[in-house]
Length: 363
Ligand SMILES: NC(=O)c1ccc[n+]([C@@H]2O[C@H](COP(=O)([O-])OP(=O)(O)OC[C@H]3O[C@@H](n4cnc5c(N)ncnc54)[C@H](OP(=O)(O)O)[C@@H]3O)[C@@H](O)[C@H]2O)c1
Image (cartoon, rainbow, N blue to C red; front, side, top):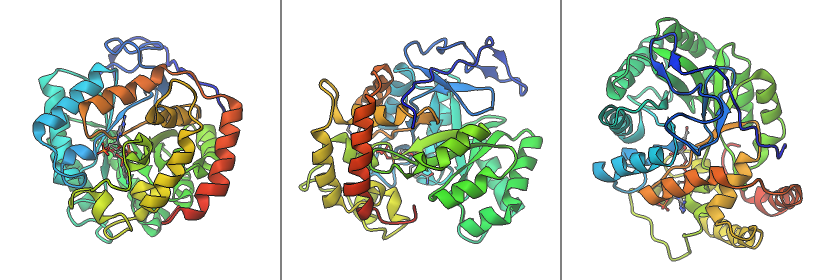
């Protein structure tokens, strides 16, 4: 773990990239229209992006309780106004609704943001329908919903390990890239083993992993290797599905269509994607310990985001937001000072002893 903050600068001037798309990601240090957000290199793609992005699973409106179109657009607006220029979505979020809303928002507001989507879970492709035709069709559907000629980044969406090991799916991604349908490709994975398999693939631009103060495993082996290979790290579940928001309690009742209700114990998908695999009550208990370790003046979510940003293998962290104010507050974590080294050591010891034994699911 390094506590140095890279404030990555890619150099260069704004202009058009090789697909003729206006490139807002190459301004030295800061983004032209997003003053205040620190930027980091996105692996070796040549892009730099705001270090705090927006997770857009919530905008699908199906797995986090209902969310209106108006609320979704307000969240996107709050995020970009706070300096966010990186959105993470997937074709499966709300059966395409998240992609559609992002595409329409960027068109309406004449904004250029880096949009990372995912393929591999929608339209019956998971778990055994992986084929060139299916991946290509899903990509064309994403292009149409996003309203762009080329996708900035397509990530394999928690594709089963045997499919990753077989490797053919990466040829299809390289083919899509050669055809100009996607600019880069990466993979969102559940386990370190899957991440290491993906890292062997030539051309892999990014890996998306669960990483936060309650899920520290990627720091050890994966991050140094990804850094060495120039592969960008995208961090999901930075707030452990809201546990690290500090507003949840044993009395909190989640709606039936919120995964924190229906997937709390892994009833529908990998339990690790809900509260990072921690049983809810235990998670609350662990968070009450963390509260005592927060430096003066920081909120719990700021502390949680700062912990992640302190690792320079991370290119972008993508907190999801249920409300516009959360998107603004989360983006503002870019302004905070790093946590000190001793606190990091205490947090590592806390994780190993108190947290790790309770984590469930593939890891
Ligand atoms: N397999 C995959 O590839 C995969 C899986 C999961 C997620 N993702 C991506 O990663 C993104 C982030 O993960 P996530 O959304 O699951 O988890 P998360 O970012 O850890 O948690 C998001 C939730 O935390 C709460 N929150 C956010 N900001 C807050 C703040 N400032 N104060 C208090 N509470 C706050 C909100 O919930 P409340 O409703 O409680 O306010 C919000 O919906 C997703 O949106 C998605 O884009 C990818």
